[in-house]
Image 1 (cartoon, rainbow, N blue to C red):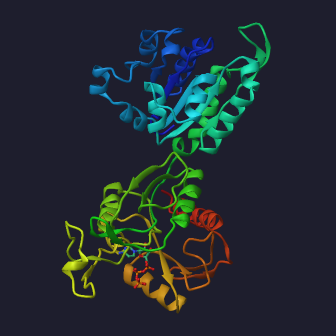
Image 2: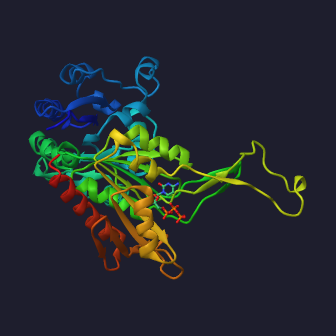
Length: 402
Ligand code: CTP
């Protein structure tokens, strides 16, 4: 394991709560840092003191506890974790989460979380089989939450069936499996994605049609192959799966700042459709029709070129810099020119001409260029482009023997 990963354990109220202490111990043996949060029901079964003693961290229990809010708010706790584990996840807690309720510390943390979340359900077999519980689980799965267990077995209530929480050792294995990409991460990538938005006045901006789908698929593919990914994205566009660091920005200048502060990295992939221009002067007040003659005259200046800046960033330059060339005509020549002018290592040229439906669509067709090679990739899904590019990037980085 390369770096200590952080687990936030939400302990719900059920007879299986007693297993949480052993679960924490086993996580710590594997070098995870653990913080615990108890629901009110959880406190009926184990004490904050026992959780604090085993984790070595204080245990907040109350959403409105002024002391804890001063030290680390529920938002900070939600952001702190690489993975949030809810164990035991009771039928009640699952129902709350499925409906987006946030009326105590644990449910508020969950709603504010950007990290991955895995539930370890524990309940009576009838409660587990109840249609309401099953619907809630499907709902949570559709939001991207993961589940581990339950399993069959005898229960504290004397019944036998599905609903037993997994054993601590099995839960630790599942946690390792979920976190595998970031645990084993050998390389770091920065991916820009989506459009940027350049404000003109408080209600108007210029932007473009980018959906961010290609950027998020590249990020997903890299992440699933074990790369540590920082995803710098413009507004309103496709987000990758949970687990990566996401930096949300508006303008090209913000995007450049997001990328610069994320360096160093092994590879930079500039998939964003960065707005080339911004208004010379931002108007603090809404531009009024009455203040103009019939037409509105705005002057735009060029934005910084992020790809070029990173390609020429000297000792901080990633080993591999990958750009895109979005062209409506003369794809090969224009892509070649961008390869040279911007100083990147690879260019993925794509024809965004009318009728191709590349911008916003699910498919892409790539002309891959570097200083020595040119490849025509057949039309494929943006997910497949992400996979192919990620494989190529990893082959390159592994070859460099980093
Ligand atoms: N790019 C960038 N910063 C900019 C403009 C573009 O980082 N201000 C990057 C894009 O992310 C892409 C590459 O440069 O990887 C090419 O972008 P593209 O829109 O195809 O070309 P432009 O450089 O904007 O040039 P033009 O619009 O004249 O084709």
